[in-house]
Image 1: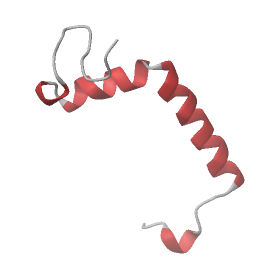
Image 2: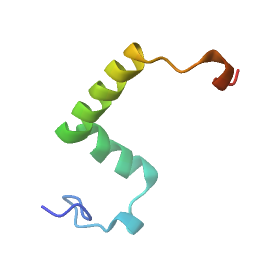
Image 3: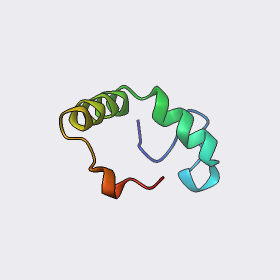
Image 4: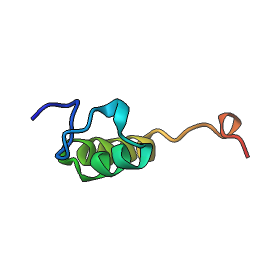
Length: 53
């Protein structure tokens, strides 16, 4: 499976942002990366002076 196409054989340039987001959300690789990022941020929170309100 190529990283540049989805099941409908569209190129990344032809897909909408919503299509790319749905593929991203379904991917087991990116689900694991997201979980790792959440765990990292729990251990190392972003300092409040960097967070815009």
